[in-house]
Image: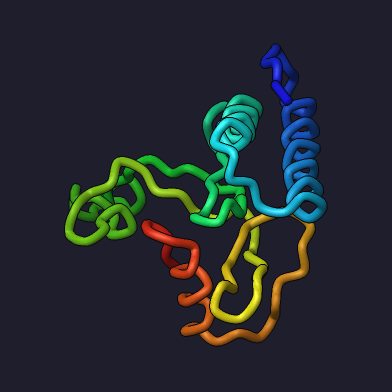
Length: 149
């Protein structure tokens, strides 16, 4: 499956992006996780192309996809007039500044069973409405290195 990039109007971009996200969700729920690096890269490229790099697909250590929004580093004064020029704390991870962070585009759902339950971000899903903060944090940590709440 290869995606051919082209010129679109803004409405077409929104429609194509939504269609792509829905196809990703359908593929995941019919075929399950993918560990094929080529397939994962193809989905990432397609999502980044259609959103001009604003969104991407990131896979956890079992091959579960999540639609993520990319945020480049912002300083506090860019967000709050008169604030210091230091990076926003969201971009400081383990004492080091990250040039970008990724935040789930959709409210997460939980997939898997028992010890392998993990959070994923896909469109048009019904998330669990009553989980504890500790469980939510654990579902994100279960995804592997670099994932957190």
